[in-house]
Amino acid sequence: MKKLLCIFASIMALISCQSDSSNSEVTAPVADGQGGSLARFTLKGDYLYTVDDFDLNVFNVADTKDPVAVNKVPIGFAIETLFGYKDYLYIGSETGMFIYSLANPEFPEKLSSVQHFTACDPVIANDTHAFVTLHSNAVCGNDINVLEIYDVRNVTEPILLNSRNLTFPKGLGLYGNYLFVCDDEIKVFDVSIPEESKLVTSIKRSAFDVIIRNDLLIAIGESGLYQYSLSSDTDTGVAATELSTIQI
Amino acid sequence: MKNRLLFFLAFICIFLQGCWPERWEDDVVTFESEYEPVFLDRTDFEKSVNVENSLSIGTSGKIYIKDNLLFINEVNKGFHVFDNSDPTNPKSIKFLAAPGSTDMAIRSNMIYINQATDLIAVEYSPQTNTASLTKRIPNTFPELRSPDGFDTYSFDIPENSVVIDWKLKNQTP
Image 1: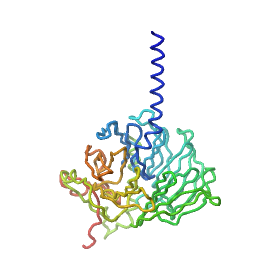
Image 2: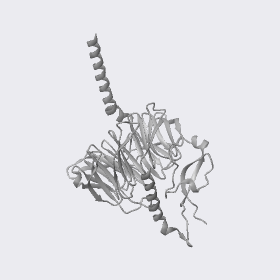
Image 3: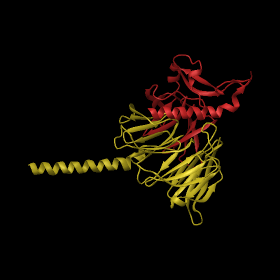
Image 4: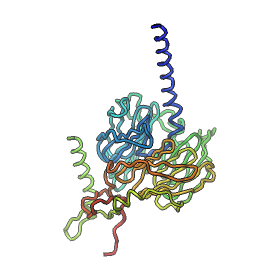
């Protein structure tokens, strides 16, 4: 009897493990929408994370109709953007990039930060690297307009691999090994070797943010919303075919 | 805490530096925003979240996609809703008015929005394009600052009202 109970318990444990992993990896992307790199809201598990000027706010959305504020974590000042990847939050501020762990989802814990001179900066990341653009304007001060690539395999110690000057970089998005950066035009970099990011092509549009979902690129600018179909290309690696424009 | 104070002081320094050269007027230095706040009485503010007929885009903000829907923020006003099931031909459907908003996130049919100082949860039906507010958490975010970085302290804001936007001051003296 005891043995039977044991087997039953372990089977239940296995089943619950399985449903857990399928929940986070299969269900979540379907139920949740997708924002651009300038987003200040992100959903993860049962929680909605948001940043305002100073704080990281945590809301429990287990009951989706009834969010409950559960925590407020002071980050610094002039917080700009929030990007969730796996169990980490990447926070872009006017003073630097912060990485927080969501090991305890109600109590995000600071793992590391990279400071830089005052500039506005969205950040996105994948398994191994974080990509940050810094740009200056009247409010942000200084004359810094660069794309920075960090090695974040050790999230407690990001290492700057590459920094390149651009004109006025803002939003950015990843398409496999290609990084789309909203600059004076939308520039596309091959970042398969992050130390040597290579400009491979560009889209002659003025935009401040992008969303890339599968092969669809959506770019938003002050005078239009532009959609492109992305595909591989023998010369440049990636090609963008225009689908439509909404004039603004 | 000490760090925050240092940040704050550094911020003030950098900030003042930017203002200094342009603000000399007959030896009197004035630190003033070029903008003035737009506010709503809280009762009206809380009733202001509605689905309206689509309108043309003025100042485009952030974008968000969920399934076939595409949202474009009208900065501090709400969200233009497009049917993007055919990306070669996105169709404008509605405007989701939410004065003071810039950001959203969507899970299933629930849209979470920063409406100025409040977090709101809005249930959106893509079938009927209707929305209903299911929750409001008031005063959980800081008040909106002006585009040139000023806060509301130096303005006469009536009690029980919420700043939803900033507009350029009247240029005529």
